[in-house]
Image (cartoon, rainbow, N blue to C red; front, side):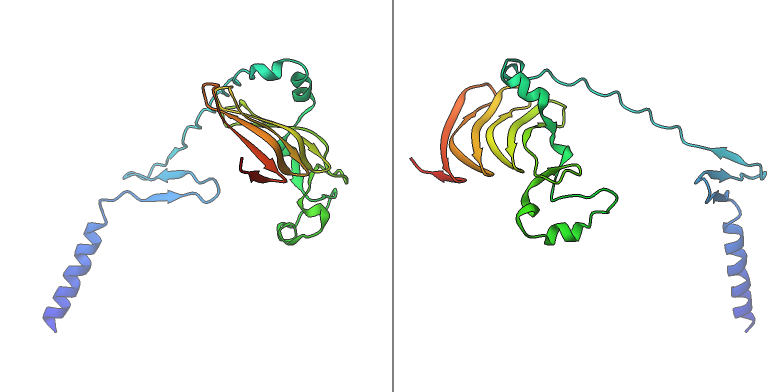
Length: 195
């Protein structure tokens, strides 16, 4: 029994001494600041330096094609793709994501803008991650319906074709990053036609 008591006492003493050299760190739940009490118990409050916000990159120059009429007018009147959404929205009424997924009917698959109650008609522009123009497409009654132009990130045209009621229609032309035509494809109601 004496051995057990001696072993217990020495173990407790060892644990007590092992913890003496550490400086306690207290986290302030209100501000998330670390306070190091140190050995003398004087508080040393440190707050991390805020990281400077990166300067916005200048937008790459627009492709030459859209600087000329009639494309310059299309680009000017085009809305950003981020302004569009599927289905109608009502002011002061939250959108239920599950209801959008399960929605059926004619309006569920059409693009709308803001709280407008009619499907969107007009030009839509899409910007790439670098801020360059990626796409310029005409929408009619909430679907792609008309000319569609897509560009490579270096400004060269990538694809040109037409949509009808949301599906590719007619001849589509494709170019590589250097502006060389690579292929032509023909579509009928969204299905590629073999030639």
